[in-house]
Structures are given as C-alpha cells and as structure tokens.
Image 1 (cartoon, rainbow, N blue to C red):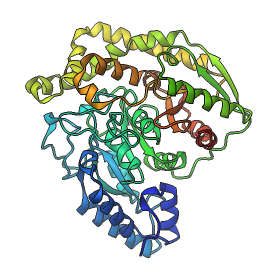
Image 2 (image 1 turned 90 degrees about the horizontal axis):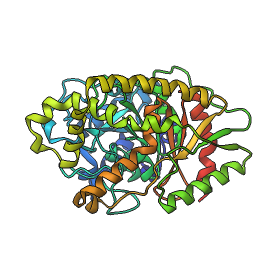
Image 3 (image 1 turned 135 degrees about the vertical axis):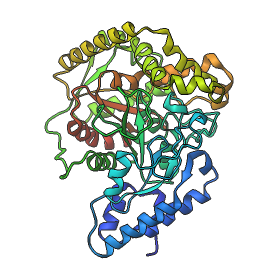
Image 4 (image 1 turned 180 degrees about the vertical axis):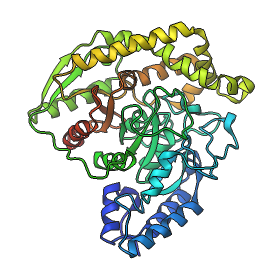
Length: 447
C-alpha cells in the first residue's frame, strides 16, 4: 500500500483510523518509520536500539489481522518507541547507564506485553538520562538526544529520547517514565503532550526502577486524544471513557513556589495562556498552598534516599562508570537516616490529604510545566554549579505532581519549548483528560 502522506506528522488517532479504514497498512507504515529512523542523522542519539526485526514481524501479523478484519483494537498496527528502562525480551535494556551495559531481559515488562497484546509494534528503545535521575536529559556516558527547537540545548529528561523520537517524526508515540517530571519536562521542551498518571495505575513490573514509591509510566504524544487512547489501552479500559467536561472550568493558579524564578519567555507564555483560557469563560483563581513549600523541602530526603537505597550496591561496585553529577546526586541519599525517611513520608501523607481538601472546589490546578527554557548542553557539562541549579529548577514544578500523587499533563502552545501543566490532586484521570482536551486547542491557537 503506497503512502501519500508524511508519516512523521500523523497522530496516533489518525493512524488508527487509517488502519481501520484500510487506507494504510501496518507494514507500509512501520517500514516508513524505520526508513525515517535510518535517514535521520541524529537517530543514534535518539534510539539506543532499533528493533527492526521484531517490528517487521509484529507489523506483518497486524497486517494479517487487518486483512482478515480481525484487528485487536485501536492500537493494532501502531509503531511505538519505548524508553530504555522498559524490559524487552532479547533487546538490550540498559537504562542509559554503563552500569547496566549488556543487560538483555528474558521477557517483556508488563506494559510492553500489554501493548504487544493490543497489536502495537515495538520500534525500539530510546536513550535517556542515566538511571532516570535527571530532568535535563544530558547523558555524557551514553548519548544526549537533540532538542527539536534548539540544536545545542538539552531535550529534557529523563525520557529524553522518547520525546525526541516523536518530535523528530520517528515514532507516532512513545512511552516514558516519570518519577519527578521525566515525561512532562521533555514533552514540554519538545512541544508535545506528556501525561503522568497517578502512581501505580500503569504497571511498573519489569521496569528498571529509580524510586519505586514514585515511579510512574505514561505516554508522550502529539495530542491529548493520542495520550488518552494509549492510557486507556495500557490501563486495561475495555470501553472508551466519556470525557466531556460540563460547565465552565474552574482552575486554580497555584502561586506557592511554582511561579518563582521564571525565564521571561516562560512568564510571558503563561500569562498568554491564562488570558486565552479566561477569554473562553473559564474561571481562573490564584490560590496559595503553604504546605507545598514543606512538601518540596522533603524532596531531597524522599527521592535521593530511595534512589540510593535501590542502587547503592550496583553503583559502588563501579562508580567510575557514572557521570559525576548523577553519581553525586545518588550518593547524597546516604546523608539521611532511616528515621528521617520514615518521618518524611508521614509528613508527605498529611500534605497529600491537605491538598485534596484545599483544592476540592477546583477542576484542576494550572501552572507552567517548567520555569526555565532548555539550557545549553555544553555549559551543563562543563559548569557543575549551573548543572545542579538547572536540574533542581527544571524539576521543581513537575515534582509537585509526584509529591502530591496527582495525575498531571503538559500541553504545548504559547511559545516554543514552553508547556502549560494541568494537575488533579484527586487523581481523576478522566476529568483531567477531558479538561486537557478542552484547553488544548485554546493553547495551540494562542501563539
């Protein structure tokens, strides 16, 4: 079947419809993406492994089902890239780290298995921040993927290659992970949609861990509809959810902490986004949440302690295999006692409950996804103080969602490499996706 469209620009929903109507077939589409990957000069810094043989076998099976009018569902025949911490049988899964070089799992993780059972095609694995412990996407040990807007800037992390694979038209969708912002930051910096569900909603069984009590998985796509479709299938929904928000939106502009230290372009873009949303009749109210500063202050204890506890033995067996900044960040987890860690979690549980009460009357919180634009990768590599400051600032706003166990989504618009984030502290995924669907065209038209 001959392709007469630019495959790299098609959305998941467009491809799914084309398969259903037999205007495109899975083999032709998969081969087209594999050809795009082969022709892309930056492909080796985006994909850690291209699983050509597996992809073609899966595509031929999907095409057979299409011909027999027996498609498995909306993902059947859809090529997807996977962040290189999702285990894939016989394909290396190294989590962006020399520590795991040569690691080849025996079987697919739960999410890859679920996607494959739904007919999705595994294009390959994408580069990432080392062991997923950075929001910047800089990885001097393996590869730093490109930023789609600024050639010498970092792409955001840790799902850096996942974002680049979609932004550069090498995959219609990618699956990444998010512990403190690792889906939403690279999505924002590459003008994509990035959706982080609540912790535990999508399985992380067979996923290389960072902080198991925070680790989540989710999609990076071009549209909210695409993210919702992937989420529905991977979370096991058998029927599409009814996602129509009734009545005027009531959004809380969170003022505590997350509006500090903005780049000028980010501040301008956020004001433009708010004005566009208000012009449609939505109610936008500025709200403080004083406990948030206390919750954010717990980050150093909670994230680094769990990360180092998870990786200490492996790291200390060969610390020379790690980028110094990542190594030091892991080792900082040794500074805290067990009692510090337990007390921090007890405090955080209280803050989570307080947030649910505090924002009960709002449909969602709204804030800039990241307070800064993508930094220069050479400066990050050479300037330790700049790296540390940029990394912490990059993760500040997105980390709110992980600390409060919210579901959150970043939407593009109102400026390149600037995202607007919506967050539901009650974890109502359907409501958040409905609101994002309503706001998405408003932001896209506000540039």
